[in-house]
Length: 141
Length: 458
Image 1 (cartoon, each protein chain N blue to C red):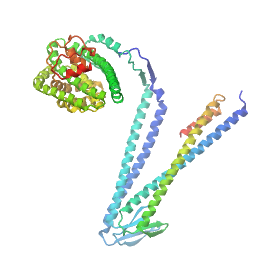
Image 2: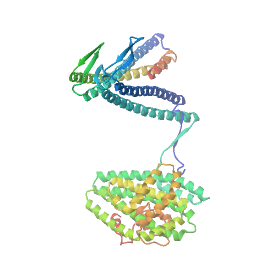
Image 3: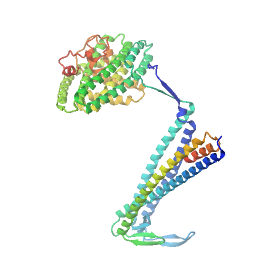
Image 4: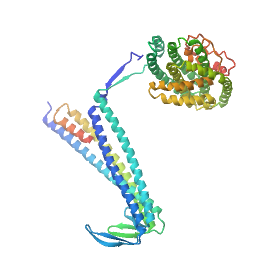
């Protein structure tokens, strides 16, 4: 008969692993959000650049900084927008790599947890299996 | 139907796609679909706002100044005047504004409108895909719920020749035309599809062999695949023979003779084309001279063909109209389909421009092929209505390929020209016999340039 202490230990391990996995999942979703924001901004900047290119040299460009509308040079505005675009593309790439790492970690953690779950199952069909079931549903969601 | 002893696996669809899961999938897809729909509505709102703005911007410069109620804070207005009616500060994005006139502003707004439209289009496309997915899931769910079962059987190929002889005799007792037709069509279709797939494999093998190895190996490969191909062709011939037996009880001799004539000619033409394709395969297309020679020869034959054309055409026309049963037509179409498909496959394989040579034949043939190609993936039942059109084309095709004089007593069962090489020569042998091997390819028509190459190959 499996000792209750060993059982509890296994249970705790399973829970910690599950927590880790949850954390990773949260990171992934945050990453997704930030990526989305950056993508939208990047799109907007590209539109602005297109319009600026269509302007003639003597057109007045103003930038809204807070409550102030500041007159800007067309060339300067162009340069600024281009710089922003570059910066944002670099950021997106960095985020992509982080996302990939996180996903890999998540997969490995998930496998480990599943393995743990199945080994525990024959011992007690009670809480462990429930924990596993709970875990599975959360993962799928 | 024929292949009884097969190892089959019966899997209920429910086990592959559990009902609840399928339904859940359907629900999920519906949710995403509704999300996309709300986004679509938002986009539509943007587009309408944009159009309203364009109208306003166009209207403002009509006056030097306008008297308006100016908003002041969150909840107040005061009367004021709108001056400089042609000057607009347009927000480009990211806090950048630019001074523009009314016309320029309208241009900017129109460009924005176009961008919005393209986004809407892409969104609609995604929604379409989602809808298709949802319908698929729905169908699967309902099927699984009904208890639909998937049956898989292995494709048994080894006892091919045995099957040929076995299924031959049992088919000779059709109770009535229509039933027999349908049964035979179904049976034939199955065999036909098997054979076609086999042919495709062979062709692929030939093709690969042709471009990978030396000539000798090629010839061997070609010869080997030819035999198999010949076997299959003979099998098809047997099938048609049985079908024809059921039909041509009375009119056999006369009609068959003339039909056979045209078929033969057609067969010769096809055989010729076959050779032409095979030869370059073996030579890796290096010796184009030979090809051209062959083509020149074929040209000559096609000239001869055209001379006879007029006579044969009317004859065959009459004949085919007389013997126009669905059955024969089906058979002919099948033949055509088989050979044509074969032809086009081969032609495509080798990339030869032989197609341009027998212009008349192939232009007709191509038209046929297109019609036939379309029909092949469709239900075989559709073949029957199509058959009537094809019969006419078939008759013209056959008339255009008159290669030899009629052999009296020729069995119209041999109308099928699929077994390209043997067929032409089987005419000379007993009419009741079905050509089986290519050993009988002795040509007794020295006037034709075809013979030279045939003898070479055999």
